[in-house]
Image 1: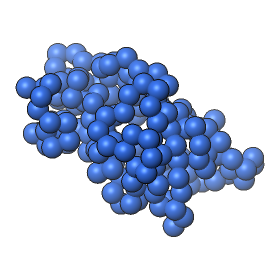
Image 2: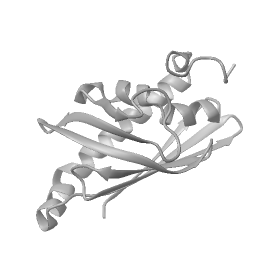
Image 3: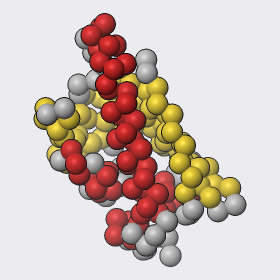
Image 4: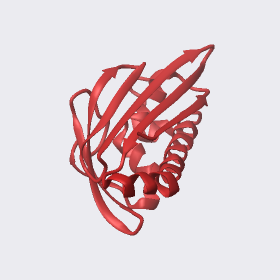
Length: 162
């Protein structure tokens, strides 16, 4: 099963980073180029334990839907989302957060498997892993940008972070 591991350093409070990473609204911003939209479940705000969201997006010229559920959650240290329905055979995404001296280390462990046996494995190797890595890197750049500036207030508001 392919695995993508990313580490992003963010100069912002851990609570802000954690909540941006689970924000449906920020996810939509970071994937605007795929016309991604939340169509059922939690469709805006923050997603939490045992909640799900269904996304519709266009990848490789094909409109697809994917539903994921938050299956593990310890704010602000980690959360896990897993595919419950969609084009993949499986997706397991562990988001971890650790703060040291005011710098947050955000770690993504993203494991996935495409269907279609040997054809899926070839597609993973040739195209899909690189494509997904780029999507995750773009998403993390947006999280970092919003967290390190006042832009996070546009998504999260100020009530619990001031």
